[in-house]
Length: 145
Image 1 (cartoon, one colour):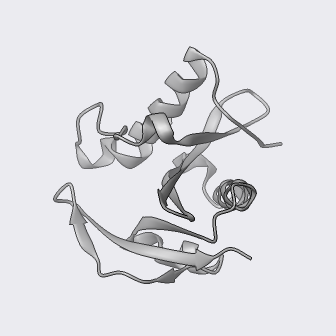
Image 2 (cartoon, rainbow, N blue to C red):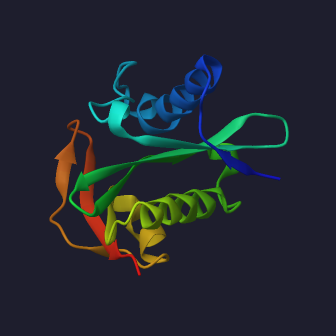
Image 3 (cartoon, rainbow, N blue to C red):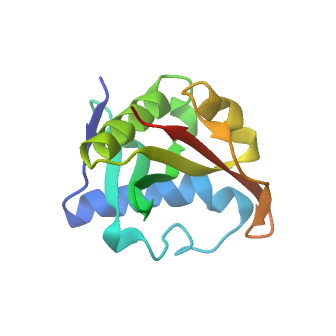
């Protein structure tokens, strides 16, 4: 059973950022610290926790511009792919964005993840750009109704 919760303790955040680094930065040789950005203090953080208390997925939400939410740093541990955890995180973040009154939500998705987001109604609305010199990202967005 997977539970989505907000990290609150030091240990929660340590596990949250460790997974972000392991999935989103370490495979490309990026240094520790690159898993965080300037938006951390104004973001809402979500983590998927399994029955053993292990963090198996993470995501964050912040307001990119007036009424537009941004899903950022969505990651699921490799051994937990294809178990619906990413879907659960996206739906949880979207529900929170609606609660906050956002009219749309988007993500700078890796080009390799566009099919994942398209399954949930997102569409590519930007031109791919190189991130950290190794990964192509593209802005994807959907309307929240």
